[in-house]
Length: 257
Image (cartoon, helix red, strand yellow):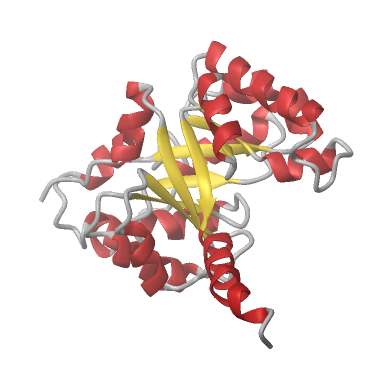
């Protein structure tokens, strides 16, 4: 059996824009609904959504038959959690709140088997290797693993160049919500200063030779960020889409109540 190809990582190398959906409902049925849409990738959120390892596994299994690539965002960059998520078959991880090059380098180490890293070994007995059926899984796994780090604080922004230069970091994701709060613009993503800062960060990451990404559910602004070099952009959030649909459905009847 061959190792599954990481289509998202291929897209990063090809420098083509990839559009994604934030998946936060913590449910495999909803995850399959998301995976069957035409997004290039979907992010299963383990930071702010009610997800644990078992729930994430169920969502990975639900998404498996579809072409949309599942990314898993961890709640934190603990090596023990990274090991578990890689073992259940996640190929792309996003780690929030990365603020230094040293922190990014430690995450790279956690993604790799010894002697290049510290990932614990259970190759023949985990879903990632299809329980030992993938040929030479331990020798080839790293080729299809992808590490994305989130820069979303003032400190992280100050260290953006150093973080971006870390070998083994495959992409840098700018988190505008936390970043705007860290810079004193809480809840004001539309402020021109924040948009200029995000655009400058995207351009700088691209100049340094790494793919940049960003969360932006506003169409016009998302297209601006893509023009600035953003390679992977989350353009929608499942909970927000559901809320909007519910509000739209009831609104015509509210005046009659």
